[in-house]
Amino acid sequence: MTRKSSAGRPSTSRRTPRTGDVARSWASSEAVRGRMQRQKTRDTLPEMAVRRLLHRAGLRYRVDVPPLPGLRRRADIVFGPARVAVFIDGCFWHGCPEHGARTTRSNSDYWAAKVARNRARDNSTDDELAAAGWRVIRAWEHEDARSVAVRIAEVVAARRPARCRRLGGTD
Ligand SMILES: [Zn+2]
Image (cartoon, rainbow, N blue to C red; front, top):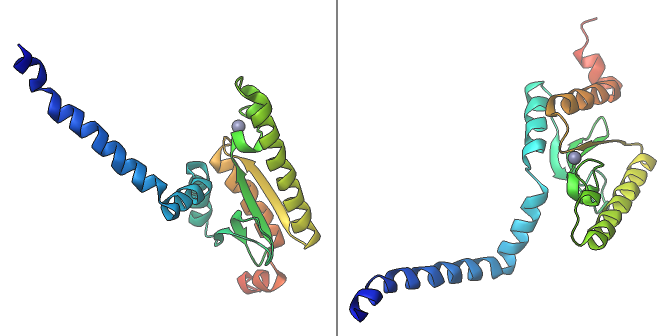
């Protein structure tokens, strides 16, 4: 009877803690954790969908770089010559009216304060870029990728430096 009850135990009870330990030590490595946190802010699905559409339309851009030297904030998509910086804002962290922190019930004060700080930072980023002659485009991650891409492409085309426009012309 006692033999029977302990028979299946060792394999399962040994396996669970071991995987847990591996996961814990892996995540506790500072370098790995830092990389994971950074990756969360780039290469999100909505952003990649927009990028794919822009690329297919022949537009070239840089990804996840500070548009201005000295600006501590990175833009998601940057068109250097046209001076257009695109931010695809996460609905929760940037306070989207439909999916933002206001819609969550628990810890609402805590999240609301955090989102308010993010929004303040977004505003100062926009001001800094505008002061340097940049055009900022912000889209919510919930927005339709195609309409966001069209919006971006139109702004970039209108702001393309004259030199590039002339090169593309036939007369
Ligand atoms: Zn949203």
